[in-house]
Image 1 (spheres, rainbow, N blue to C red):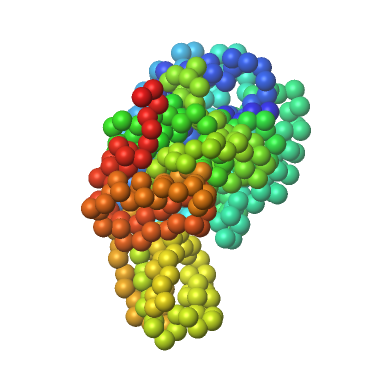
Image 2 (cartoon, rainbow, N blue to C red):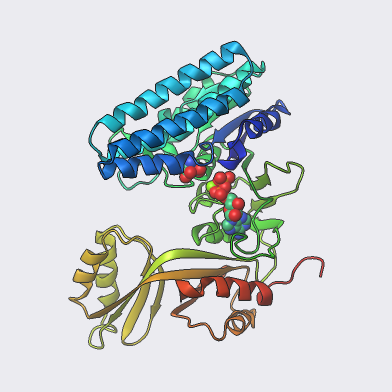
Length: 442
Ligand code: ADP
Ligand code: ASP
Ligand code: MG
């Protein structure tokens, strides 16, 4: 069994959906195909939720009507046959009725999540209808029947494994399954999701659950690049990445992968291949347990970082002080990314500001607290054991006039992270691009 995930752009137009159908029916090997929402849909659904929250019901209705219009013409391009068009009309009616009904009621967090789920429900149903119309039958597996997160927002992998097996056993002759990325149920049995970009994570969780031979992430670029192609002009594709390198890059901002995608695949030792829907023959990037002997592989950046410094000359070296500090973050379920310490202070970063004021209030009982928001973590990833001298110098030399707020080295041999003010991000990524990489064919 292989798991193939197609992102929003890959199913973003009727022609692209036709292309995905071709790709997934080329061979008869068993597959589970995970689809995102048609590109732009989740953003519109987010806007509908926001309008509802602001009690702008007219705006929510307008956005919904426009979205329905978009899907009406999408279906005309997708499906030619009369019966298939009729089926797609019924699909649109049922999901847009759900949206309209939600909009008539007051906003709630649960309602918002139900709104967000409509994108993947629509794309998978329309795609399955298209396959059927082409005489390529596939079984639609409802993600809400096997994908669940627990009270800590962590995927319930045992549940997924058990439920998926039971579902797949019902269709022992079927080779092609379609399912929704991103959506799941939560511990209250309500509709929830795996956070923006979460379809990658769905694919990896399914891959691990069915012990797939490979997980393929099909997207709009030819694989993982050495730097963020949205920011830096001259980037290049990386052939092979280790799970550790890919996990660091995804977690620290390489948008091609949802931050947690690699963990389930790595635990189950299932290779992950990043492929380009628009250029299916291109080799892509293979992520596996193989580690290349390459000191610097790629760089990624994660925005929206808050730095917190706690200064306490009296307490820092006293045993138990760090525990007290960390307990504050644990209490507010806020994870820490970078940490550096000195004799009189500790600096750390968080990206979730939901409980920032409570956290700060409690930290103030331990010392003097300073906060800097709007920072960016720039993460250089590669195979750099400390014995390999010169890597750090190369990085620091490349950005020698950019103020570095924190520097984290030695936490893992795969990662050196720098904290900078967000205003220096573009400059930093470009300078690193020019100075720390050996471009292929040069
Ligand atoms: P999908 O909709 O298929 O999930 P995404 O937009 O989430 O696609 O991810 C693909 C995009 O990730 C690319 O178009 C690219 O702009 C961006 N990206 C950011 N960093 C990297 C990187 N290091 N390598 C490749 N793509 C990257
Ligand atoms: N549709 C969701 C989003 O846009 C999930 C995904 O595309 O992976 O975030
Ligand atoms: Mg994505």
